[in-house]
Length: 271
Length: 300
Image 1: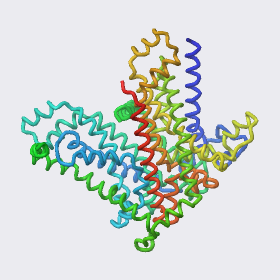
Image 2: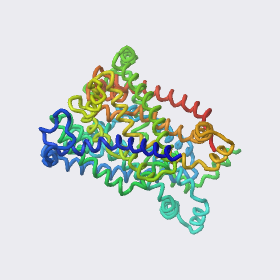
Image 3: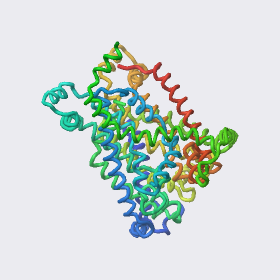
Image 4: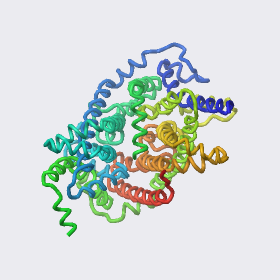
């Protein structure tokens, strides 16, 4: 029994090492001068610790601007997506109106359809609206998200009818019930879907790649992609940029780790 | 009669409020899902190229071109290869690690948190890091190979290996997600089931295959479904690591092909036809999966 447990630890630690290794390789490369990059056999540690790679990133591309753009798009995207999903999920879960089932089934079906199927006509429509290369053009076409509507509806369904009824007896309007009864009782579900929305918006790639033309409104993933394709493939600088893109996310993750894991479990079990 | 009764129970105020609430998603869905979905079928029959207005109706020409086109065929095969290799490996590995974590071990939440780490980091940054790891000149991977006296490899530049490199990276990136879900599933299985089987003299293997696995089947189904959806959507790592679709188009998947045709070659009509074909493929997959799911899922 004991040796078996030892084997478990060995396997876990080995796979953990393999998992973390790319991060270490990234960190160490970010501090290497050009002369340390292509030596054979590869150097594990830099011979001299070189901090200029990080400042070079800011000279090569408007990195801070990309960060701000990404934060802006993410903030607006998350708030709007979660907001309209809550609005839609409430009547779909708890009210009676014609065509309710049809709307629900439609939302459910959209979850299975990859974005690429509708991508080209969506681009035409956005061009027609003159939204190409604008924040509007990046955000609005991606706001409809079937998953968050369905997921919130599941949560709203679980609220006991009594809570709603007593509010109704007090003469609350439907809007009041939504704000004072439904939302406070489903905080867990709403924060889960917000976290999910944050992750999706922060890493949005395919659509921004199509819609953004100018460097001014490039988001972080798009900026990194162009640093790779337009730059001279200087990997120490690319790694420095990657470190700066990854570390803040890791810090957020470390603070909210419990919440992240719970969110994933929730959606996995409920979905 | 029943119909009329149902209609009568609708309250005017309730219906009005409901429609106000669903209005935003209806407007968005109509503009960015329904209209595009209908238009993509129409565009597939045209030779629109983004420069000329609208393009002309050319019947089935795009479809004929695609069916005979080697790159398009490759993109379908590459997508299926990606899904066919990645999904089973992903399932087996994540379930294996989840069962290890489900044992009475110390530091479980530390392990779980670290396994999940690659999931949260941005895909583009992770792809760039791995592009450097796969660099044929200097990669530590080749150093590892030479340690075992194996010839150094060209990784992403080798047409036989490039897709496997992408798959391996994608496994690294996504494994933690499934581990967390499987672990939650394993922990929700009541100990009494396992205990009862053990008292009856069942071996650990038998317990796993006859009790644990069937009880996990709804979760396995969910993971499988997500895996298929994700595989059909795979694009970011391909576009970052192999911006031309890899050597001999060995990593050009469906989304990549459509993107390239539409937004690099401006063959919007042809790309739309490819999107329609992809749509029907996914439809077929979903139907088959639903059928298999209904037959094989056991709920507690």
